[in-house]
Image (cartoon, rainbow, N blue to C red; front, side):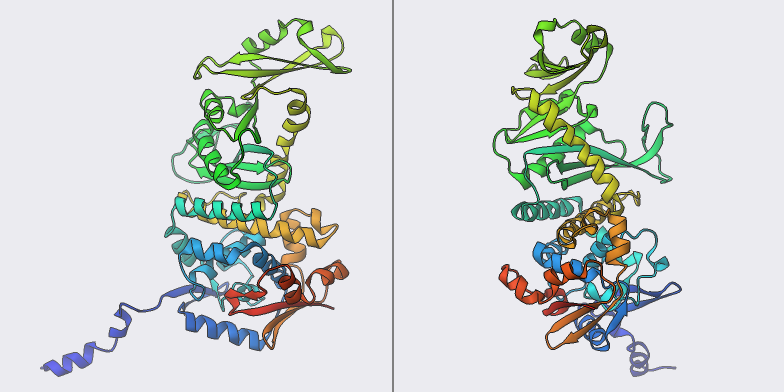
Length: 480
């Protein structure tokens, strides 16, 4: 029979696992067939990163280090620390940076099936390992929709200070992606000829002059444009803080709704211009307008303006802009727009409203960053993942300005395959500087002008040249 001292000896061996101050562990993937639990405490991470820097790294992911420079200019690290609520030495902001870079290289699917380990990808995130789907899911699930929206506002204000927005014309548009969820959800039809499908939807605001996204909201497929637009404009207003009547919001016919129009009319910073649907009653009213009500602008094009009240609205009086195309009366075709502001109609119709199509160009070029594939229906996780992809898009936009042609015009997929994950090189430490060497960089002379001697260039621009997630090492580049 065991005595008391023997029982204590038997059961005390694993007590250290239950210490209240125990550091977290992170599930990591080393190869496609192997995953481990790694220590996530600051000391272990620092040892692992410094060891990798001392060993040197070679691979095809070193193009991401160009994006690290833009993170310094953008202030990405402060945004990620603020979103996670953790300090620089912790693992959580580094996991968030991993998600930003995964978005930048347009990855999709399960992390264990991707060949991004052992090629320099982990090190640029300030980590000695690649976190698995489970670890990323756990991090995203601890943050709410409100956290993601605060991150969008902070990012938007930084971009506004960097002149990424002009805030004169704003395009709003829903973006719906086919979803394969097994849940019972509302289905949407792409057009009258297609079958209804389950979708995951987002609602976007884009600066129509610079073609840059300002913010987005996402929701279940049951949320309508009328319910989502006010929240989207609330976020936009926090970012742009427009002066009265400064920003013209252009939308498609889906936004021709009394709730939307009345809401925008009450906002002093925004005016709305939206096409009216080609319904029989509206078409009949346009065709009955007398020819003298139109002003001929040029051959085959005339415009008119008259007061208009919506039947189901608040009773406020708006302006109906009408354009008439065709030279002969038999060829006349009419199109009507509703404006919440009384202004001359020619510029909004011919110059401002066509900019709305830039939002479609944005989706075609950038949706692979994280807005093309519909994942989980957990709104906290979707908001977080998509907002971190918004940071990646902002950094890539700054990188394009320094790449030169043709790289500056490449879409997200092409840029990721040719630059961010397509350049061979090595990473090593020299004194207090991480030196990245490229061997096959396109436009090497132009890149050399922007990135060689980088610490001095950043200092002259008023940017701190040290990488806080890499223990304040500086960064420099060589092109061979």
